[in-house]
Amino acid sequence: MRTQVAIIGAGPAGLMLSHLLHLRGIDSVVVDVRTREEIEATIKAGVLEQSTVDLLQQTGVGERLGREGAPHDRINFAFGGELRQVDMAELTGGRRVTVYAQHEVLKDLIARRLADGGDLRFGISGTTVADVDTDRPTVDFTEHGRRVRVECDVVVGCDGSRTSTRFLIPEGSVRTDYFRQYPFAWFGILAEAPPTAEGLVYARSERGFALISTRSPQVQRLYFQCDPATSADDWSDDRIWSELQARVTEAGISVPTGRIFQKDVLHFRSFVCEPMQYGRLFLAGDAAHTVPPTGAKGLNLAMADVYVLDRALGARFADHDSRLLESYTETALARVWRAQHFSWWMTSMLHRFSDVTDFDRRRQTAELEMVVSSPSASRMLAENYAGLPLEPVG
Ligand code: PHB
Image 1: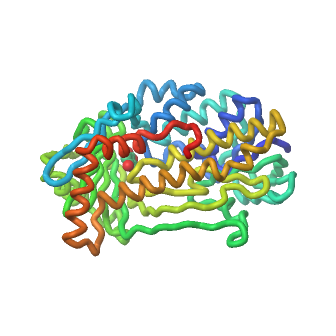
Image 2: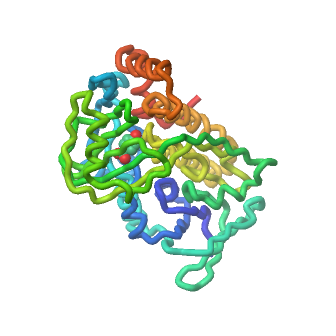
Image 3: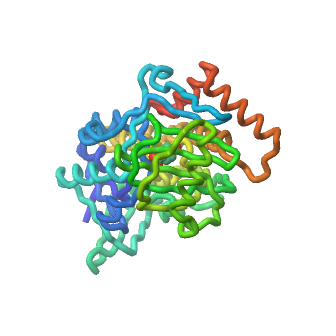
């Protein structure tokens, strides 16, 4: 079969790209090794920047988000025995974040693609992408025991942090990978409990970082910094609740408890691959870059990549103008590196490092104090957290 754009991966980047391309009349096929049920049930992030919300709403997939998403105007920081606020909406002229789980975004996108007659292939295996350095790339895969070949003009790798498409860009001669590891992980839970606070709480304590987030009035998402060697099974529910509580008590916060129905340990790192294109192959989202979750940027960067790529593919297919495609890496990476810095900075400012000295502790406190009290420092945080507009970032 033939299509214009073959998209590997039905996550936020792949599904949104397919949706945006459809709106401009460009055909695509999306393939994923996971089943639709797996994709719709995998719990991931949940914080949408203002521009992600706007993009979903302006392209007709934000109706349930508008009804069920929880907008947050403020970010809370707990440190030094107090709970302090940064008023994001006021500092940014009304930009805010909305908590709406990633898998809910995916459900909405899948439903819309299928209603629009989109070609989504779930549960496929044995994917092989070939000839991306020619003008006739192919994607082969097995579906229901049959081998299928897709001939296309362009392949887009949206296959997440466990990507295989990234490795089609020759390492060394063309591709450079930039990494940073962190000596800790996050222990995450989902619990049936009432909310702790109005808005998200980022807490720095002597015992390490904790984050209080939410999913709905009945379901809360909480995290605490842990040893990366920890296994989720090592922690009883009582121990989890007392660790979370211990990290926020000095700020006067009391965490309501409830039934824990999911426990996971999140390992994270900062990563960027450059370039994000090679011949007729383009990468988007986590396949090209990952950020630590502290800045809540992962899903939003995926959306920003495909926003740029959709416009570039539009110019290429409608007007035979390849200039935007040729500058895709440069345009996308400007935003990616800005988010890398922000995510690294938030992580460094809030976590406890094992070799921490008294000097580091005081410096961290001074930095947090500056962020919540200096209008220009608060605005810097607020702008980056609520997210930059989708125009190219320079
Ligand atoms: C979440 O709700 O899962 C969440 C919120 C904020 C973050 C990371 C994760 O920085």
